[in-house]
Structures are given as structure tokens and as C-alpha cells.
Length: 70
Ligand code: SF4
Image (cartoon, rainbow, N blue to C red; front, side, top):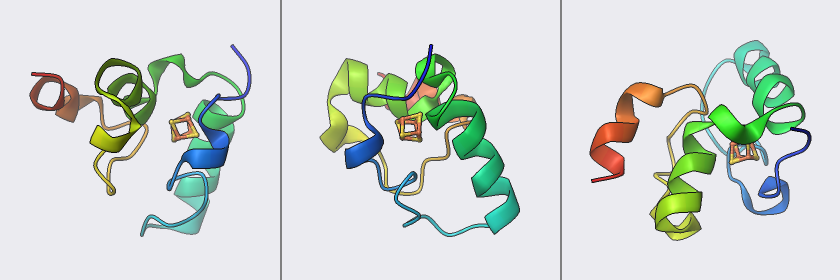
């Protein structure tokens, strides 16, 4: 656990994803800076490559993983 290895290459962490600032900041703290292992974006990048991560995917959008990892 700890900072995500994708920090420098992640559109979500870079603030390029639309959404409520408070929610995004909270997700960054929980996933990006503390424990990336459960992040949906991380899991897609790890298994399919970072280029396969949908731009709008939120770290907590685990419900989308099954389709994305097919
Ligand atoms: S959103 Fe996920 S992949 Fe992106 S930096 Fe945060 S933990 Fe890593």
C-alpha cells in the first residue's frame, strides 16, 4: 500500500475528470495516496495496459470492471 505507481500518468489524479471536487479529493486520498490496489483504474491498467483505462473511470467504479476486463 502507499502511493500509486500511476500518479504521474493518471488523468483522474491530474484532475482531468469531471466531478465534484470534494468527492474527487476524497477518492485521491483514499486510493491514489493510500491504497491503490482496489482502484478500478489501477486494475484496468495493470491487466490491460494504461491505454485501456476509460477516461471517465472513477477509482471506486468497481461495477464497471467486469466489462472492462473481458
Ligand atoms: S486513480 Fe487509481 S490509477 Fe489513478 S493514480 Fe489514483 S489509484 Fe492510481
